[in-house]
Length: 287
Image (tube, rainbow, N blue to C red):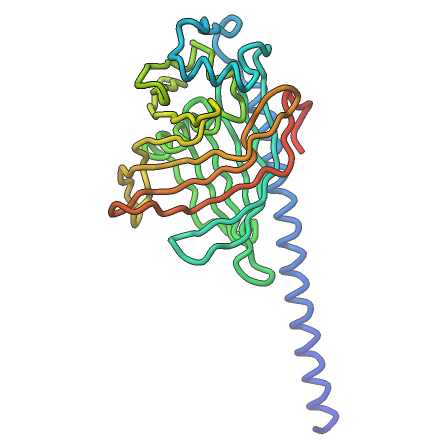
């Protein structure tokens, strides 16, 4: 290789390093911006006005027996209503029924009005991640998906997103159990000795699902008809959420392991398995 060719090769290599470095810097900056955006949305969630007046707690004797037992066993029956929760989680996620991939995320909940903001990140290849921000605020859902916190793949809204996010919220209120007793938003109907039907209403939208309680009195499963995205169309599909590994946090028993699954063609197909790493009640602010 002569000197001129060597110089050209060196310039090309240096240009490639600069481009790769620039992209890396862009991704890092965009990732930080997105984290800050999620934190702003969490603050707005907690600052949003709720229903007028204090929480209207349903009398324990008016609740279905398994719900009453759950609130007593979990400690929620004797606890002042929580305002919010924040948590970090790890776990695995399986997009499109493919291989399980590691996921990490943070989630924020409010009690009045009930809502959540979640942000998760899945590493799909070295240096490449897919992040998603899901939320239900005022009963309105929104899913925003990005590659490496930079390039938008999806920013979905609409009635099917509203229903799906609100059902997710209802099932995950086991992380905020005092909210399940607030009659302004949640109504319970008896089914049998080990299950009860809950209806959550926020912002003029309502969803209904069934809680199934284990022998220990704590929720073990959550079932509903939920919209699933199938080639860009919302299709009502049986949904199952599983709760396990209950631990006590500041006097409340909450699950530290959650699994979400669709039932397709009669088969249960899990797609998300979350393991809580940190959970705080009534936090002062976002992470």
